[in-house]
Each structure stands twice: as structure tokens, then as C-alpha cells.
Image 1 (cartoon, rainbow, N blue to C red):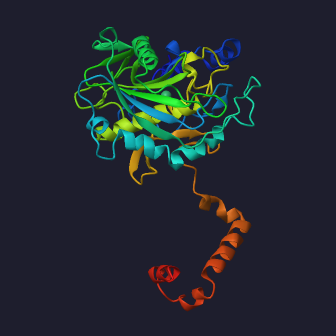
Image 2: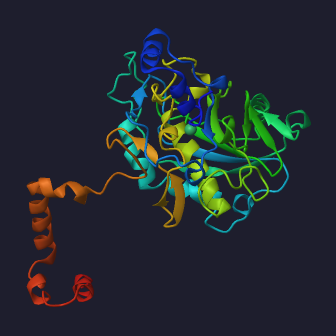
Image 3: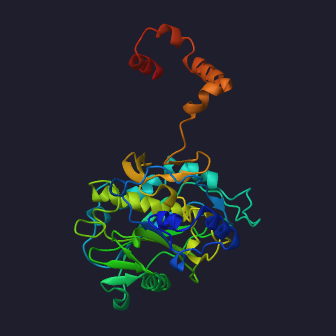
Length: 371
Ligand SMILES: [Zn+2]
């Protein structure tokens, strides 16, 4: 099981030569059950530098991506939930998913399109990543056998499978080429401990996690799911996941990590080696797109105009952790044509009016445009 907190220890344990030999002789294996965790990690507590690891780079291993994510929020039975999960007022978790899926936060992920690209193994799923949508929230009634104080990933998978078969959750939808594109973001009430192999939710240790995402094969289609333990005050996650004093902001940060990792590596839960169906992955750092920027936060303005705290994600193109493509203006100085185009466009728009209003303030010029 990979966690960032384990990595420095592993690097200390091996000499550079041994590490290189290990890379060539035997690929490391993926994590427990293949699911991928968001390790407990808060920069202010750990002193981790707010940059991606040196040499960070995602490679395409031939698995699917999610073309246009459709998010279903799942509440795990009764209990105490974050108010923004059960309340109607925005911003809330539904508006977060709907908002960020219609924002620049998703647009730059086009650099991870698989269309026109061959994986390391020479295959492709030929997909294009674009904006997504939020389908709605469903509260399931878990079977008692799957709903103790401690809930394992196997129990979560069994319950999701049962709920899907019973028709209590919408089935996985597919893109035009038949690839699954529904993401089930599961949220748990206060007091539940989640286990994934040897890892445990909301404990500050090398085997602790804030959330994870996984893959469930089902007769209705591949099920991509995310597991979000409660983060309210009094939970183990309250002070160790996310960097804000706002539980809601910490929850959206963690949820954004899993959402984007699902979009770029949805089949990780059924991958067992660095080959299909693994998607975009950094084998040297044993990390997905969010892990390379773990706990580095920023904000995005959603399509709803509201601002959400999200985690940065790693961009190969920019070799940096980002939440949106850098502004085009940053590169305008080395491109004369765009300047001429801009000037021509401005002249065409302003015409004779520009000379008449040239001495006026911007507000006045704006008013002139309305005529
Ligand atoms: Zn992750």
C-alpha cells in the first residue's frame, strides 16, 4: 500500500543503486486491493514541501479514463452527517460536484486524453476527457452485516453491488464508446471507521487515510467509487485532513482529490501491475495525479459562480501542481500574432466610437458599448 508518508522511509532504506535495481528487476506492486488512498497528510503538521516530488510524471498504462464524469453522491444510512451533505443551502456537496465539474478545474485534464495516444504497452482506450455533471444524492439502507462500527472495503463493495442490483442506485452510465463514466462518491456518517486492508481511516499514522477510490466490477458495468469517512468535529479526520478550519472546505478538498484521480485512473482498483487497466500513474513515485500534490490546496470558481476549496493536481504539461491551465496572457509576450489579432478585434468592436469615448473612463466606455 502506497502512502506518501511511507515513501521517505522507503527511500532511506535503500541505496540509490538498490532502488534502481529494484526498478529494473521487479516492478513494485500496487496497493491493497488496488484501491488508491488519500493518506492522512496536512502540510502544516508534517512540514512537507508544497511541491510535487522531483521527477514527478504521469505515464499512461493503457487503462480507461472517465470521459465525462457523472457523479452520484451516496449517503451510507442514517446518522450524523456534515450539514452540507444533508442540507439544501449552497454551497454544499452537491453544488461542489456540479460546480467543479463545470469549471476550468476539469478542462486542463484534456492533457490526459487517451485519444490519439498509445500507452507504454501500445494500446489506447481512445477517450477524450471533458466536463461532467452531478446526477443526485441517494441514501441507501445498508444491510446490518455491512454496517458495524468498523466497515471494510469488502463490505462497502458488497453493499454497493447489492444496492445496484436492487435498483436503489442508478446503474453505471457509459460514454459513446461504452466506457463507464459514473462515479459513486460514498459518504459515511459520524462514528464509522473504514478499513482498507491494513489501513484505517482518520488516524494520524503511516497507514491512515482521509479517503480513497476504488473499482468494483459489476454485471451492470464497472463501478467507480470513492470512500469518504466523516470529517466533522470529533472524528479522527477533523484535524488531520485538509488545511482549513472549515470542515466543508476540508471535505471538498479531499473529495476533489478522489474525483480527479477517478477521472484519470478509474480502474486502479482492478489493476494489479503497471499495465492495463491502470490509467495515468507515476510508477517511480507510486502515485496518482492527486497523490503527487497531496494536501496542496487552492480554490476554483465552479460553474455555479461559487468558490470551492480543492486540491491541486499534477500536470505533466506544466510540470507543476495546478487547478487550472495557466492564463494565456502568460505566454502572449512571445507571440506577436495574438497581439495583432487582439488589436484588430478591438478596433473592429470599437470602430468610430472608440475615438469619441477615448477620454472617458472604462465605465463610460462600457456604457458606450451597450448602445
Ligand atoms: Zn490519491
